Image (cartoon, helix red, strand yellow):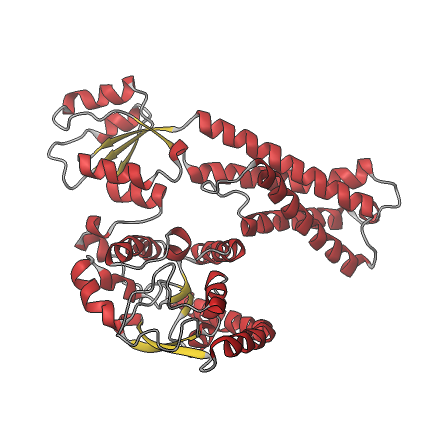
Length: 435
C-alpha cells in the first residue's frame, strides 16, 4: 500500500491517542487536586490539542514515523518515549505559564508513558497491517524501466508486490490479467506504449492506473531527468507562479536566518576558536557558485579543508575527503560549516530550502552530461533541499544526475508544506550526524 497512507494512519492515531490521554489521565487516574482537573473544559481541550500537535512535531523531528528508518527493538521504544517526554515537557511549561501551577509529577509521568506505549503499539499494528497488504503492482513498461523502478524502491521493499510482467502485445488480455491477478496498481509508459489501453475499463474493475512520471513522483519522490520531456518542463515557470507566496517565502527566509545567526552566534565563536587552533586562518571559506537563473554568487562557509586543498584546481568533494581537517569532519557531519550561508539568504543569493548550488567549473560538463540540468536554476539555491535529505553525498556526474531527479521533484511540488518537511528532515539528519 501507499507509504504516505501508512504514515497518515500513524499520524492520525498518534494525534488521537495523545489528545485522549491528556483528558483521560487527569480525570480518571489523578487526584482531584491535579492542575489539569481544576482547569475549565475549554482550557483542557486546548491543552490536549497542544499536546497532540507537540507529539506530532517531536515525532517528526525524531523520525518516529519514517518508513525507511531501520531501527532495532530498543530504538523502537526509545523514540516514542523521547517524543512523548518532550511533548509532555512542553505541556508542563505551557500549563505553568498560563495557570501558574505545575502538572503533578505522577500525572506528568503517566501522560508521557501512556502516550509512548499507545504510539508504540499503534505503529506496530499499522506496520504489520501494511506489511501484510503490499500494493500489487504491474509495471507495463520496458524491461529497462522496470529494473530501474525495482532498484529505486529497494529502500522500502515491503511497499510493493511486483506482479510478473505481461507482454505489451497482449492488449486484449491486460484487463482480464489485472482482474485475475488482483492488480492494485498498473503503471504504464504512456508515451512509448505502441498499443491503446482501455483505461476506463481497467479503472472500473478497481485497478488504479498511473503514468510512469506520476509513479516516480508519487511513490519514489523523484523524477529521473531522462524521463522528462519539453511538455513537462513547460509547467515549471516558477518566476511568475504565485508572486505572493514567493514574497512570503522571502520574508520567512530573512526572519529565520536572522534568528538562526543570533541563536548560533555563541556556537560560532567556539567553532572559530577550534578551527584557528587546528589549522590557523582564514576561518571563513568563500567560493563562487551558480545560483538563480545561472547567475554566479559568492557562497560562505566555515573552512573545513586544509589551506592548500585545491592547489591542483577544482576537484569534486568526496564523502571521505582526505583534504578535510579533523575539526572539519565534525563540522560537516553536523552541518555547522553551512551556518554562514544564512548571510547568503539574507543577501538574497539563496533560500533556506532549494537545490544546492554547484560550482561554475563543473557547470559545462554537467549541462552536457545531465539532461535538463539548468532546470534547477529556476528557483534560488538553498542551504538544504529535497535531494540532501533523500540522497547521499554527490561526488560524481552520475550522483549529480541522481540528485537532479530529486531537485526536479522539488520544482514540480514546490510548496510551504514541502519546505517544512525538508527542514524537519534536515534536523533529523543533523541529529543522526549524517550528511
